[in-house]
Image 1: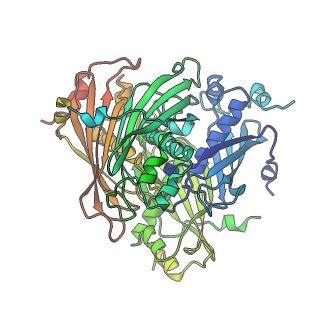
Image 2: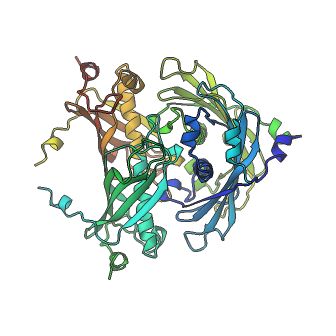
Image 3: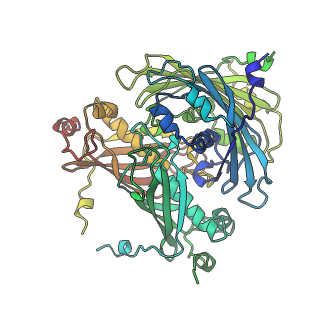
Length: 152
Length: 152
Length: 152
Length: 152
């Protein structure tokens, strides 16, 4: 039984980060190298925070650091050069001194004829972040951070 | 005397590729790692080709490969996390069997208070590309490629 | 109940891949960026195959492609610039048409005074790989691949 | 006339940094992505400093920061997955408040049959570094840094 797992939900607000796949993100198999999805995830969660009117840099200046404690990625289909990808991201779970972001990467338009069809799921993932202070000791998620993501 | 150098010009069309600096692009000095500017350059030239109605992937399918023969980068000021950067890119020079792209990276809006002022020049660079066939032997730049960049 | 999980074991042979942390692998938090552990994992499993007398490139030439289907990473402590890290890697599980590598990253010697103590566990992870043919359809793990990892 | 260019010399000490090309360093063209050579350069100059008994991290702790001011790379031949590469690196020039490292990347053993022959030159480059203090203002290269590289 893993209740923490089933508790992950697409809470509002949800952001959609978009970019084209660059050559530098592909590998000799002709597809996006698996580690680069973690970069996509980070850009999406950075955008989610930015869209709430703050920057992750500002979060750190306020004394809250959110190092990644766990990363999970499942890969369903490969992305290729110039594919237009979209990364959905939301906070999937709030812990007392942690938070978990969830992600879905889809191909919106293939860069090449015969590429993945529109809206094809490429990858799903999650990142669990510890909430720590500048001294890297666990710290309860402050109210202002939780409220940053509150939707009326 | 370096005539090949002075010949680099901002020919139309010019593209402007924009993105925010991600955490994964910074280093322990707190600034964008120097190698990542070469990624920015590539995304900008990919966008330039895309805006002309083609993909670099399509260029390759037509039998023209453009491996980088030379890279030059001058760094003027550092970029930090969440800075909104803009990369101008154009074809600076056409050779018989080569082409050179030129780049300027600027900070349009700092991600943090006290960051680089708007429109500050961060980096300037160029990439010279050989024009080769699928056999990697030199090949004259085909007319259709040169015309792709022609502006009425 | 997750039997596939408990079945992961450090089967012989085990390899230990070593490197120093480079500046380009760190981020603005001053530590190794989380996505780079997936690169470390890949270098370790490439070394494991190489030490068995083959290259992953040769595996592909023989018609067996091993795309990553799932990545899991748990982060315990950060690595810093110039830390001497060691990545243990082994095949943790053979499936009918898949295989799972397991990893542990440790710091053997800190690059800086006050860095992580010798042999400190930084990260543990696993990558599950599908076994597919050149047509990307599932394929039973061939005997020669399984035997490559057999120890008398 | 480019006197600063001709002044670059392979002063002792010279280091040779070695590694295998990983999958994550290649791109869809099947070769090492051009930006990754800048990572190779950095690992080589980090090793050069380490072999002199210091770490670049220690250099910074002593108040000397060496941000890259200019990067030049010429690419002669591609490297592929699992190629054993070697990067020679030395201080090519000392300025009053700057220093320039020079690099040569060679393939010592191809990862695949038909790969680049032993000792083939793949890439040559240089990085010019400003010498600045913690306030990022120019600073004369301190004697202890210059002497670090002195050979009897």
